[in-house]
Length: 168
Length: 168
DNA sequence: ATTTGATAATTTAAGTCTAAACTATCTGTT
DNA sequence: AACAGATAGTTTAGACTTAAATTATCAAAT
Image (cartoon, rainbow over all chains, first blue to last red):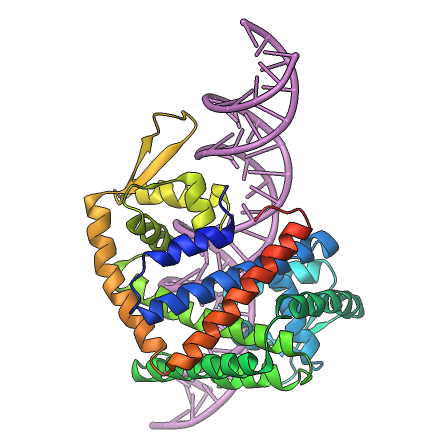
C-alpha cells in the first residue's frame, strides 16, 4: 500500500518543472489537508467536536464582546448561510448564545457561554500543542519566508478581486 | 465594510507573538481558502464545474491508464465514499467511464472519456493561468523555502501517524 | 474445500458548504 | 411620510464530506 507521501511524489513527478505555480499550489493543498486531518481527528477523538464548530468558538474567544453573524461569516471566510447552521447547533449544545443588538433589529451578537469558553480553553491547549508538533522542524528563516509568501498571495488576490469588481 | 485582509489582520493581532505554530497555521489556512475561492469561482463561471470534480478529472488526466476508486481516494486524500458520489455524477455527465478489472471483481478502473479529456484540457489552461497569476510575486528563493517547509510538515505528520499506528 | 481475515467499493446518517432567493429592517432621498 | 436601494440574517436546493456499517470478493491457511 502506497503511503500518502509516495502518492504525493507520484502526483508531482509528471508535472513539468516549469509549472511553478501549479507545483507550489499542489504542495500547499496537500500540506493543508494533512494538517487539517490531524486537527479533525484530535478534536473528534478528544472532544467529539468538529473543525467548523471549533473555528467558530475560536473566533468568539478572540473577541470577548462577541461577533454578529455577518462578522463571523467574514472572519471564517464562509457564507452567512453556513454560519446560521453551525451557530444553531452550537447554540443547541449551550456553547454560544445570541443576543439582539439594541441599535439594529436585524442583527444579533453571538458570544461564548461560560460552558463554551471552558470547553474552548481545553481544546485550545491541545490544538496549539498539535500545531507546535507539526511545525517543530521549521526554522525561523523559513517561518519568515513562509509568512512573506502568504502575505503576498493574499495581496495579489485582493487586487484581482478589486479589478474584477468582486467584493472580498 | 472590512476587507478580508483587514479582518485577517484583526484575527492575527490578538495572538501572542510566541505562538509561532498557530500563527503560521492561520496564515496557511487563510491563503489556501482565498486561492481555492478564486479557483472555485473561475471553474463555476467558465465551465459550470465544481472543484472536487475538477480534481478528480485532473487525477485521471495525469494517469492515462486510469485509477481505481481506492487509488482516487488516496490520491485526492478523501474517503472512498466521497469518491463514489463524485465519480457517479461525472459518469452521468459522460466525462469519465468505469471498467471492471479482469483480475479483481471488486474493483473498477476509472478513466477519462474523450469528452472528459477535452473539457479538462480547456479547464487546465485557465487553472494554470490563474495559479501563475496568484503566485506571480513569489521569488525562486521563497519557492524553495516554501517547498522545503511543506515537505518537512508532511514528513512530521507521516511520523506522527506511524507512531500512533494510524494508516496514512 | 472451508474458514478466516483483509480489502474494494457502496450505502447510510449526519454535518458542512455554497449560491440564490427571500424576509425583515435600515438608511437615505424626496 | 413614502419610496428605493442596501444590508442582516435565514431558508432552500443541491453538492460535498465524513465515519461507520455493509456487501462482495479476495487470499491465505488450514
